[in-house]
Length: 533
Image (cartoon, rainbow, N blue to C red; front, top):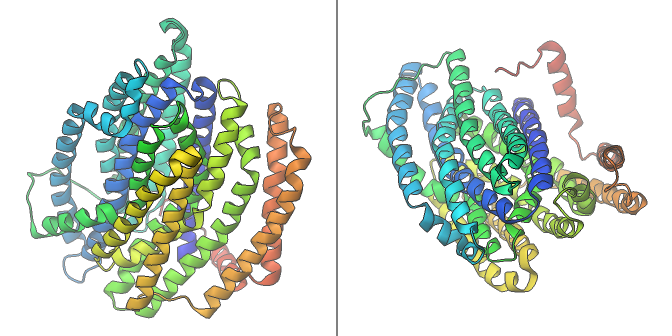
């Protein structure tokens, strides 16, 4: 478990850094654009390549590519040479597929935007702006997909830091785009459209910066890729057959995002912007814990399964579940209780009004109800993918998505954007419960008494922390929207008190594996952690 925690710590720490920059980005954007026409158009233009990135590049492609590359790399015959040959063959085909898909999507962008946001046509200029911005941002998909492939190569070699760092570059460049757009806005008549265009151009430039960095990191790791003529080798064809179902199975959350986008654009102006910014709070723990766990566990699990070590695979997944719930249960409770404080302190101000902030807080509460499920999906799906079973998650995801769409048609007209977020949380929970049931029935993973007892203690510690936060929240109600100092110290009190309360109670009642912490301390003294590995 120590190696898992070390890898999760590396990925999670760098992802946390990225999320901090992402928060800065959204805080600036909220104050500069608010929740109006240009903000909604930009959010749609950002959602399209970003969703396809998570769905295809970091989702389906990674879960299919990493086990195959890892198997070739660690095989008794071939090894490094076979892995390099496979990666080059994939790259040669992957580049042309990405070029073709991007070109077709850019030509068909008016139709794509119409499918997702036809209601934008009711607002003069909004639909056309969304189409133009989306055409500028969509090339980012190709660039970041190549970044995902290079990250997969390094992840298979247990070098997780470079792939976890590249999102930092994205947010730094986008922050620069906001600043540039704000400075140039007055030169173009003071229109918010200027900021939206600057952000779109910045997204494409961020893709260039990320690809350049990952190319350097890959070469530094001793991996040399070369472009060749595309060949549909048996391995490439097998990868393609695995990617098709994995596109759906690995991407229920991303597909749900597109569904949510469709429904959100039919609601009053600003709804899509409020949903996406509320999801930023939800994505903080999800990105740090969920993506880190999923990224770290897949290659490790693939190696155990390849060698036929079933008990070690069970132990690895149990450890991942324990770590995931230890971090997400208190995070979900704290976000739900403190949502008004976080939203007010981070986003309200400038063009983002108090009324917008109140709606956003309710969206956050609904979204984080599914936070543990979002993370556990990242733990359970690799158990299927590492066995090259990408079909089962397809059927599970299809059922969950169908239920999600049905619920949306019922709750969105009644509860609006908050109902939309709640439906997403509910179906994510249904999805993870179904995955666990199937794993248990197939004998691939089961909940042990030790693990269940640990989670029960985590829930007790979470309840103790929640009681403290419920008492603290009203005491500083006037500070969350005050000056910068007041906002910072009031949130620091909430976060600090919550962390201390949870981990103190968790330590006292045995919700934390003390033996693991002792092992980690001994290992850290004997061998410093190198983030470049």
